[in-house]
Length: 111
Length: 113
Image (tube, rainbow over all chains, first blue to last red; front, side, top):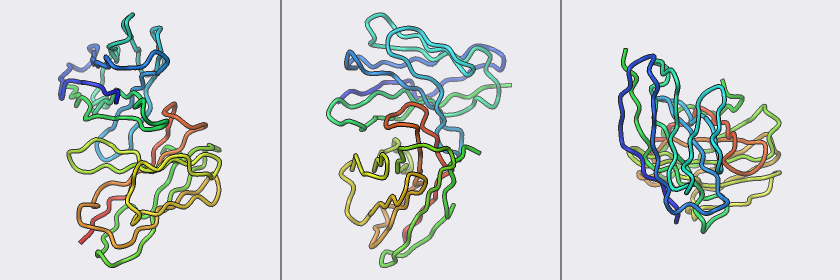
C-alpha cells in the first residue's frame, strides 16, 4: 500500500515560514497528494492538494518534486494558531477510498 | 464551525449497551464518512457513503452499524462494544467522494467501560 513518511515533530518561529516535508515514494502516477491538519481537540481541516504542479491557496503552498516521490507544505508566515498535527495523505492503491493518514508532523509555532 | 455537527460530544457506555452517534451536515454535500481516531494511532477511515449508498466499509466489525437515511444525516449505531473501541469518532462530509475538501465535525469522544 502507498504510504507517507513525515518527521514526527518540528518547531517554527512565529512569522517565519514553516516547511513540512513528506515522502511518498510509492505514490501512483495519477494519485493526488493531500494535506490536512488537526488542531488539538478539533477534527482535521483540509489545507491543499496537488498532482504534479506546485499549488498555492490562501492557507499554504504545496511543492511537489518532479518525480512525485516527495512534497513540501509551506506555511509562509506561521502563527501560533498554526500549531497542529499536519498530515500528508495519499490513497492506498488497493482500496478506492482507503486513504492513509499516518501519524503526521506535530508542528509547534513558537512565540 | 465547519457546518458538520455531531452529537453527543461525549459518551460513556457499558459493553452491553446500545447507543447511536449522530452526524448532520449543512453544506449540501453528497458524501459522508465515519472515521475512528484512537489514542496514539492514525486516523482510520471506517465507512463511506455517497448519495446515501455505502461505497466503502473498511473491514469494520459488525458491532458498528452505519445508517445514512439521506445525504445530510449519518448515524453510527453501536452495540456490544469492547473497551478497545474507546476512541474519538469523527464524521466528515465532502461535495463528492474522495479526500478533496472533506469537512470534519468536532467528533464524539466514546469511552467503553
